[in-house]
Each structure stands twice: as structure tokens, then as C-alpha cells.
Length: 111
Image 1 (cartoon, rainbow, N blue to C red):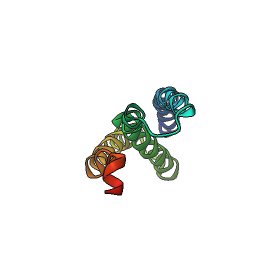
Image 2 (cartoon, rainbow, N blue to C red):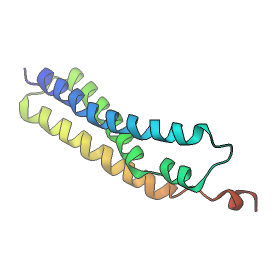
Image 3 (cartoon, one colour):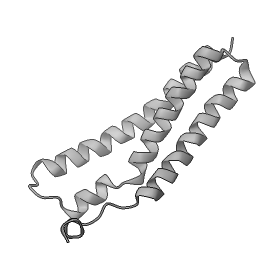
Image 4 (cartoon, helix red, strand yellow):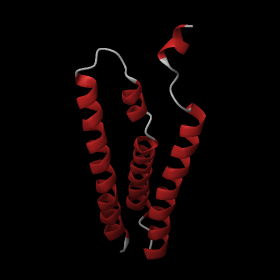
């Protein structure tokens, strides 16, 4: 019964990503609170690839934990599921980030 231990470890793996993302999002909220228009530095903060990667990894690890709970695999399969979900989350986030690219400038939307 190794899967419960790895599911808890995967939950602990989510925590640092959530903490770092929370710090960055608080900074974005602070800088946008006083701004009436979108500044270029605010747009840069919103386009931070770490935010997308963090979200992708956390979602993939969550689904990996669900798979661990439903399949109840042995130790090595559990390790493979957790590692695979982290890698899959990173890869899918990078692919999505490349597809969307940076946000267009404000003038490009109107013109």
C-alpha cells in the first residue's frame, strides 16, 4: 500500500507551487489596484510563464492523485504516475504558453 504515501507526497509537492504563485498573484493585485489602465509592467507580470506552468503542474498532479486513489497501484507504478503527472503538467503548460504567446498590446486590439 504505497499509493497513500505517494498521494500525500504529491499533495506536499503542490504546496510550494501554490505558495510561489500566491506571492506573484498578490504582487499583481497590488500593482493593479491603483492602476486604471493596464501598464506594460502589469501585462508582463500577467504573462509570467511560471504562473501557467504552476497551474498546469498543480492540475496534472491533482489528476495524478485521483488516478492513484482509483487505481491503487504498487510503489513503482505510483512513483511513475506522480512523476509522469508532473512532467505532463510542465509539457502541456509549455505547449499552451507557446500557442497563446504574449498578450497583444492595447493598440493592436483596436487597430
